Image (cartoon, one colour):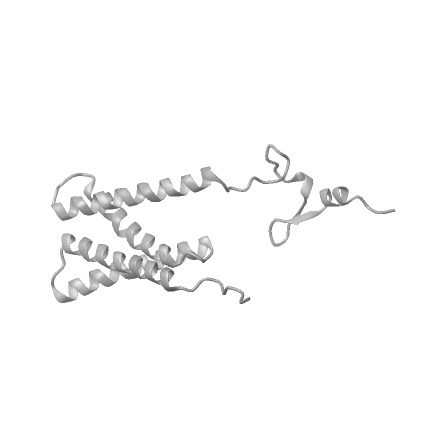
Length: 163
C-alpha cells in the first residue's frame, strides 16, 4: 500500500531550535491553514517603504534645521536620525543583493565608519561645526548612493543565449 503524502506531511517534525523538535500540526497556523504567514505582498512592501520614507524625511528635516541654524527642541533628535539613517540608507542601496540581516549589519557598521571618519577628519583639521558635519555626511552619502547607482547601470545582465 502506498502511503498518503498528505498524511505523512502532517506528521513531519520541524526543527525550531538546536535541541527542540515539535510536530508540524502544532505549529501556529494562518487563516488558510498553511502554516505561518509569509510577509510578502503589497502591505509588506508598503510598510518597509513607509518606514524608510519617514526616517529619511525626519533625517532631512534634521539636516535642514541644523544647516539653517534653527534652535528647536527637535533639532538634536532629528540630527541624530540624520547621522544614523542617511549613510545607512546610502550603503544599503549599494548592497541590494545581500540578505536583509547582512545588509543591516554592514549598513550599520558603515554608518559608524562614515560618521566617525567625517568627525575625526574635521576635528583633526580644526574645522568642526555641526553645519559642516551635516553637509559633509550628506555629500559622502550622496557619493556612495551615486556609486551604487552607477555600478548597477554598468553591471552586465545575464548572458543572452546565442542563436
